[in-house]
Length: 280
Ligand SMILES: [Zn+2]
Image (cartoon, rainbow, N blue to C red; front, top):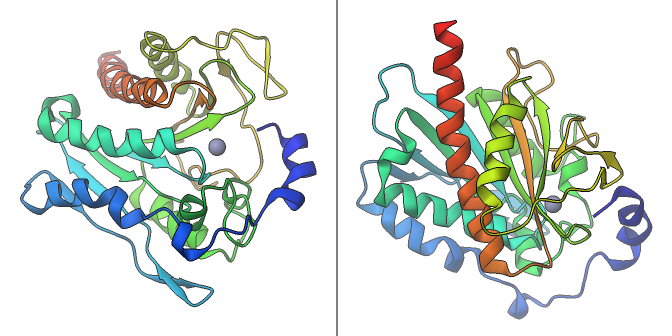
């Protein structure tokens, strides 16, 4: 959603009165993946520490998938979904991706993949963009936010030194796929093939202006908004950072498929780029 619209509407539409009985269940959502991890030597369920929100206990789900060795050091990637609680295609895709990796581990050869499928648990439960306290988590990073979700994710981003960070989102004002290329200069060479791959199921947004930013072939080369989830400001070298957006009003299954195709393309192209760079 464009920032201007967001600022106008966020106060009036936030905190929808969802009763506890109407909430979506996160444990139900992640249960199949948790079951898969139980007997796996490659997939691990590692939820983050508990925290309390309005007297209720939450923890952010985290999964780790360790691919077969690739010959060198493992490349560490973080995939973050559900930062906006109503953008469920990314949430479902991140879990489907883990299940697919479990079936076909070779996709992740040489990779250690950390997946955070529900970064905004109260927003997911209530099916809202915002947290239950009315905050947009994607404006809260790296300026001393007191929100426990943000603090925990910042700790992960700071401690794990990801080489690549992928955020999965959906935009209800776009009729096509697009992405923000942030961080390392390499990012565009990873995002480009990801968009191409996903274009098999949904069109790329070809407009010159997307979300008020200049865009080219669905790629916005800007650091976008302040406070979005990403590498810590001091991280060097900068990881590649992709914010991948599907058109939120499109068919849900197609959006999930688009995210999956994009994620797989990122893995294969980043590895090629890294090995080419090492040969130069
Ligand atoms: Zn979003």
